[in-house]
Length: 387
Image (cartoon, rainbow, N blue to C red; front, side, top):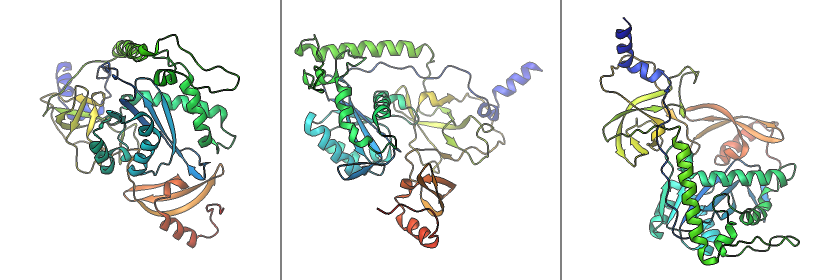
């Protein structure tokens, strides 16, 4: 009886999807090769959903963070969540390319701006390789994530009580963080980049380094290589190795899937099986997903589980039908209500294909006609403050 039960469970498709994986996470971390020169590889990411901040006559709600992989030099650019690919290109030209030249590679996530056709065509024209993180695996761009945390800590200390002045603090934050020795290279990014540290304070001497100027690039490369090996050794102690081939069937972790069922806790932790359409690398695979899943189909191996041969399909509860995506273009159907919370205006919005939800006013900027129509029909409801 026990053997029959174990055999049935092992070959049951519904059981495979319903049981949480108990193995070590899949996928070894492979040490990356340090860049051969400063600003040949840069990483970038956005810090979004910040309170509005005025600087030089323009209001911003996001920060574009750019980091040089070799020297760890950071550039902080005030931005907006609605910035287009054209705006991103202008920002990079003004703040990066004009000072440091064109990089060979730009590493980013798969935000809509970074994968827009205008942006990809620009990279192709400039002969810059675009390297993108796989879905729900932010470790690909961990360097910029760390810079984000350091910048947020700086702003937490120095911004005003109402958080309205953070955009004016970015130049000071950039100057200060580039003076601080990197934990990886032990050299201040400004010194590694320019061979000297700019004078940043009237009473504090600039940072110095005992490393000869001609050796700084080599020292940074060696330090990064050692750090990458140490991190990989520590990381891989808690990982298991698995690989797939084209045509293999796999199950996909549903941690980032939205289900039509009321409880995520009671829904299946795995979905599928799905066929592997292409092997991108040892750690990234492209799957054949249903057409209704509007998401990039490349996933890190840690999101995948092997689907053994001989598993029997049976009637099963419906699987999740959509994927969450921080950069998805949800279509506004209408504005239902408005309110103020902690002094900030919010709208209750009905979405095409999704239930209504409360969102900050700036998230409805793309539907000004619907907002205007709502306030025209509800003149006594909370509305934007006139300036």
